[in-house]
Length: 318
Image 1 (cartoon, helix red, strand yellow):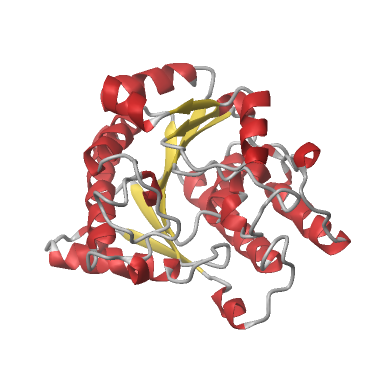
Image 2: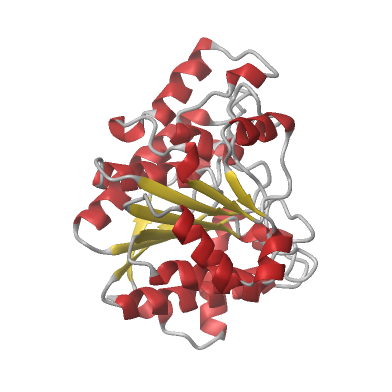
């Protein structure tokens, strides 16, 4: 692969269930079993993680391990920005979805004057903040960091000054806030949300495309609709959480599985059509958890097929 730089990020400190750090190796096993040279041919960058913090007591219940997430965000942001600065295409294979906030920060750091669109393929909206999160797990907060929102109007708890300080650091990674606008965010497959997220989505008129709409309309037409909706954006990031897919059809090998999701063909079809558009500058796959897989390594195998197909599109477009 000449165009792609594969960024491996095993950070899972934002998740509430252990095992997402093992997703990268599970995907590599899937590639080996498929007799693929994907990882042999890829230029790979590895991001240092803070997973040793999992052995420590939780510091803040409202934003668990937030100090470690701040450090990981900085590293992701610097790496993604550097790859884009060399006119390469970063494909990220990450642990939990909190990492996407760092990815968005890196894209914006590389293109500070560009309008960034985000396509979020996920069962969850990930719009929580420490003020609204019922769990305090930061993998439910990355889009709030990118949007620069606390959603404090719908707060369900008070947070400490130290959490506030670190939350502000997360939002300001790359020294740009906000990094995206609500009208430049598109959800696909979101079907498991809490009230504060629903209020924010409704009040900001965030576009959300259901699994039913994808199934009824078809992946190609939906992708064309989304790209047209983001026509004012200069660049686009596609974030793919594997829990967007139906856990009963695929597997339960992800941290927060949800039924009635996309098929692997629908997910792949959407992603491949998005990546044809040269405005798409970055693609990320997250939340593969082989510890939870009820079908051996099925989720990693599925994710690898989607990644491999997506990478072929990226290389082909030049």
